Length: 103
Length: 165
Length: 332
Image (cartoon, rainbow over all chains, first blue to last red; front, side, top):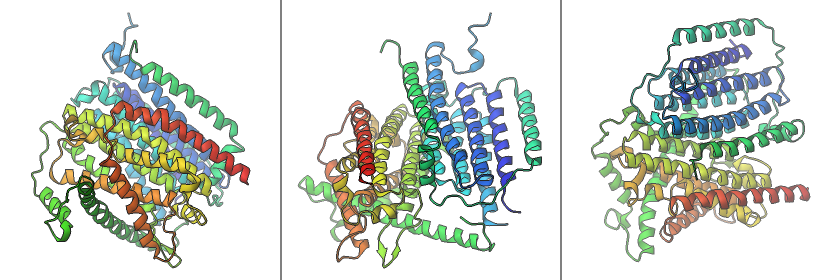
């Protein structure tokens, strides 16, 4: 069977749902960020696969994938800075223990 | 079985199995370290898709910088002791259900659609084509992305700074 | 990359790749680690007005072999609460990432055929990516030793390495802009009339400094100095794992020296002598320079080190790219 678009789409869907499971079920804030990175990677694979199979010769998929990589780096940096700041004042990184606003 | 198919299966295994370890491991440092083979597997998939420049950038930024950042924060916060703490909250069955439903729904839609697949040739020099595209067609995206990078850099430094320094 | 028409040809490619990997790794292990350690001790002895090793073999040349045998038969100690899997994989990550950089280095030219494992389109970018993978090995080595000094050494070394990746990348980009390509063979071919060291002196200096910092060499070796933090991130490593760390470091130093010759000193180009010989002469001249600097300068503190990278080399690198871009565009 020839390698084609459906294979890459299946892989990207699998990776995305694995990342989603990580975001929904983990307690550590950094682990949630790791799940988000997996989801972003899945989206990137999707973009580059469509570039290769549906519109080769022009580059929008890969350019978009590069922009997503850059923005993922920014978001990881800011998110982890927030985690560090929260740890400094609240002494915990588990998101179910950060419930100061609840009555 | 063609060579590409064999390579794809190998790379898919190298990507998906560590990804499962990332989201289910009880040891947070092992989870962060499993991100590295996942990212390297994805970069191998980019090579299969003839996107060499994106491959190099993926290794440089994801495996080389973001993983290091995540490891730094883990080591500087409570996870650095490596003691086994309960890592999952009470929503595990719901999480599995939602992720499974999403995967099933997406697969159903995506695999049944008839995509206009064109068997064309990618440009020979990938980096050159991307560079030209970034500076002509997508120049605005390029500039805005650099602005976002600057803002997030400054923001991250300010947020993570110690009080009074 | 084409779809495989003949089903057998990809197995052949895998065999070829494995054989060339084995050849490159053996070569790197011999020339980088063994010769490099021997040269280091001899040159340091010469600079310090003493003779280096001279008993084992003629002129002491088998000294590194003796050292390796000694390290191999040492006891393999794993700290009690260390994570065994992570602890064992850290030296492997460092060594393999350093050795993977050898794939894009052109060793010379036999007639028309360039001696390179793979002339990738993105050669120098791939090299920068491989040297950024080394950081993960160092960080995990420091953490998994379950030793607060090793952890601090690992964190310091990792922050040093990631800070110096940027100037390294900037120097590479300046050269790539002048040569018009990211492929190492193209860059060497573009130095036909004049070497890039004369056209890009600032990039040359930035690259040398960043390369010395990337391989944890003096004056940037605070994270692994013997008198600082009990030798840093590999404090708890013994025997073969320690030997693997050293192999990885010396292999990366040789790879950086080889990349310096490719990017700035004209690669294998030169009159009369065969190209391979020219390449080795130039590479080992750079290695000698690294070792000379090591035994001449005192080491920098961690904050001086990071200041140098972020406040000096980064703006200079950006300035260099700006000026190079201007010149290249105006000259067209």
